[in-house]
Every structure is written in structure tokens, then in C-alpha cells.
Length: 113
Image 1 (cartoon, helix red, strand yellow):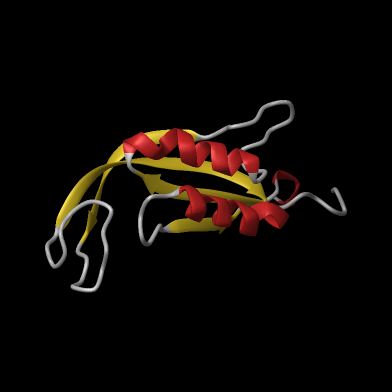
Image 2: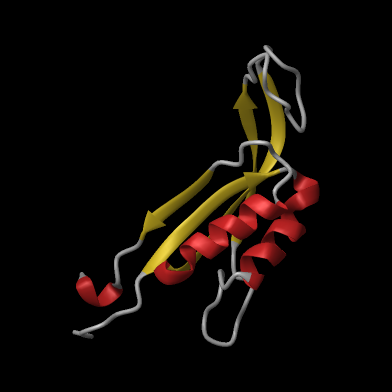
């Protein structure tokens, strides 16, 4: 067993279809989505986001005080744990939403199984 395995974090975020490339570039620039000699590694899939902004919100899309449904793309990628804060900050800076939801999930190292 490796005494000091590199810990990874899964990063999941949804974005409008027209912001996928911008957010993926931001993730890569912050050190996310790297495997060996490959960068920009991610899985993307279409879906639908649902939300209801309150009266004080400033939504990028949709209307205040109304349940909204919008087409979104889910980005799933990963990064080293020591890069997770920088990757999350890069996503927030590149993301058009007022409140981007970012999931940061610790991953098991294969040698720890």
C-alpha cells in the first residue's frame, strides 16, 4: 500500500449549455481534470435544472418567485484534494449563475480498498 496516496475529489456542477467550454477551461486552468498526459478530462451529460428564485434573487435565467426549469449540462470531473478549493473558485468565477451549486466529493484511493 502506498504510504502517501494522492487524494482525489470528484467535482460535479451543472451549467447552461453555452457555458460548458468556459467552465471546463476554468477547471483545467485550476488543475482539475488531469490524468497523466491528459487534461480537460470530464464527463458531460444533459439534464434539466429546477429552481425557484425568491424576490431578492437575480437569476441568470428564469423568473423570480416562479418555479423554473432550464436545460443544463452536468459536468463531472475530479482534482487532487489540494487543488479542490482553487477548482471550486475557478468554477464560481466562470459560472454565470448567481448561486452555482458545486459538489465536492472525496474519492477512495484504489489501494485503500
